[in-house]
Length: 391
Image 1 (cartoon, rainbow, N blue to C red):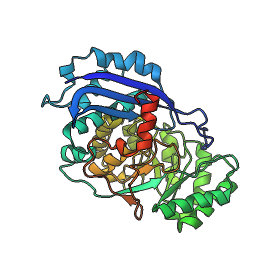
Image 2: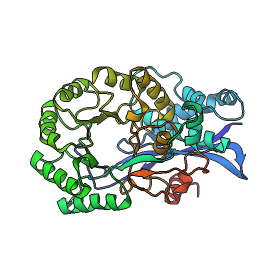
Image 3: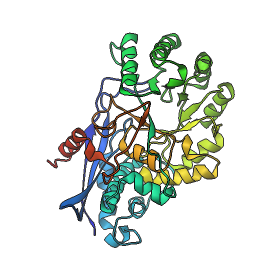
Image 4: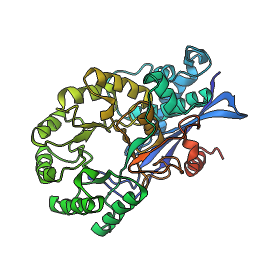
């Protein structure tokens, strides 16, 4: 049993939209396919993965640093204790061999994409959906048969006015979503407040709207914005300041009583621990949003969840960022608080299986699709194969 080939490419995620910090005109993502000599139902077992949105692809790091380590590893060392499947943890360790601690950043997206593909392989060889494996192995067999999901949207686009934003939010509600998220922080406070109030009008109440600053505010700006939105009772106020400025986060929480959400730009369990220890986060109020495909993958996220539990945090306070199917599998099998999705942007990578209905803000998962379920999005698979020249 061995890995026979790893294909990878830098795939475009280009869009004219923007948030408070960046535009996505030149955005890319790592796309990988990990091929094996295993066969299931007459087909070779191939695992697929990609990095999430908001960070750029790093094909050079994959080619020059990480994939050679995989080639050099003894194939037997990459198997689990049964010898009949690959071990995601062993492969993760091989990829990270000879890496110094700290400096979590570009390398974490490379590992995250590969780790997604490896877990896809592991579940396919086991002939089980990934969520079921996570439930049985890491959650005492418990799972959620439906998962809270919310769409990430409300981006700034050239020519996009308030009526267009209203239509977007109305469309999400018509699709079955309850909580929706929008971007803020790129225009003056008064303009953003008008946008927020219009979105609330479409969604029915402030508790159905989350707002995301993408780390764009200073402490003074974050406090000012927090005071303006406090009466609205929003679902959460996301990433108001730089994700590593734990002092800003702690100070803001002293002035803002409602939920803060952050964590999508923390790429290791050590960084998450620092947020929980020094960022003022409240375990009964606030939300944690690590992105599994940006922070070294599901393998590192399992460590992150265990570490957070030791610090008094329930898994229910985790909402994976990224809007992709591995986050959905995690939310169901590990009983997290829910997960993000992107039904309208970052296509075809965003969103879940094509036939997944959203009912009152919740979705269910396929019960019999081995792996992560990427094959249930034909346009996504077509794009991955195109980028990797697998057609």
